[in-house]
Length: 246
Image (cartoon, rainbow, N blue to C red; front, side):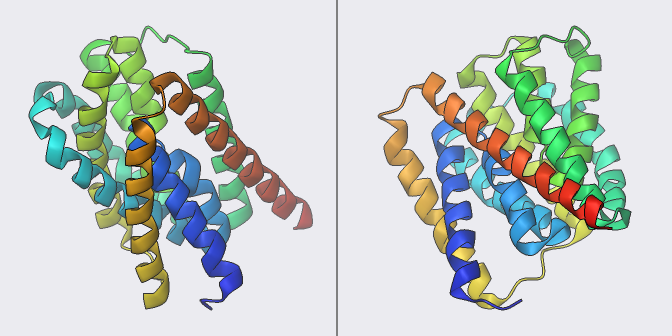
């Protein structure tokens, strides 16, 4: 991959924005950045890079919040995700790029619209709901870097507060992104790209921390969802364009 400025600048901006949004709202790197990373470096490396960032961001967040993790509630979510992560990785490797882009864009757009409407799904409650959400999240995380929305829908239906959700989402994100990287491997990027990604990630976390003190939770959530919807629509458009050209 050529590390030209025409690539490095948008790449750094995407990682920076995703990290800032994640620090600001507790979730969002995959929602905001994964679609654009896929467009920049390809489906496999883009999703794997989103998984790497998820490990780093969740691990950093847990350093301060690990005492509030509800391990008993996390067990069915994580166990179900562990089963479906390999399936998602296999599907991502075998689908043609235009098909994968179209599926990712459509799925992300649908999930964002469900979150915007605050959809309540009775099946996503209790242990059975945790298993269903974990299974869906594990598959989507390894195939598209989009494991967060399914867990968010579960948290909404389970009645979790924001204070409860953030540390548990960080724990889940750390574990499931590690699963995804084990199943697929790390992205194949040059050293300058890795260094830029690390610097942009660190800078985004600092910027998000500074913004968090001045931004309400409601407004932060709206920013995440608006950016995610835009990413989903752009990815969907590119996928459909690729299908039309074949």
